[in-house]
Length: 119
Image (tube, rainbow, N blue to C red):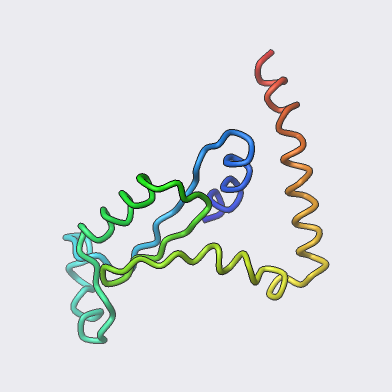
């Protein structure tokens, strides 16, 4: 998630590279045979592998960028845009302003980063 958060805006803004992430809840595979019964007993929605694959294909076949998709019980929820909208509330306005100023500085430095790497 740290890599996703640190690259999603920068890479799209400077290189037009889309960055998204999938966050699947329990998915019924051989890897989870020892725990999946507990999830089912508690009524937690379970994914089938095709649910996660469909979410992945959706992220590839649309122009969405900078989104985190939570996959649960075959349903897909975009959560990152909602979290971004309330970031000033949970981070605090002054820390949010600092964060945004730093992001702008990083974006402004993209040209010198390219020039240095290209020499």
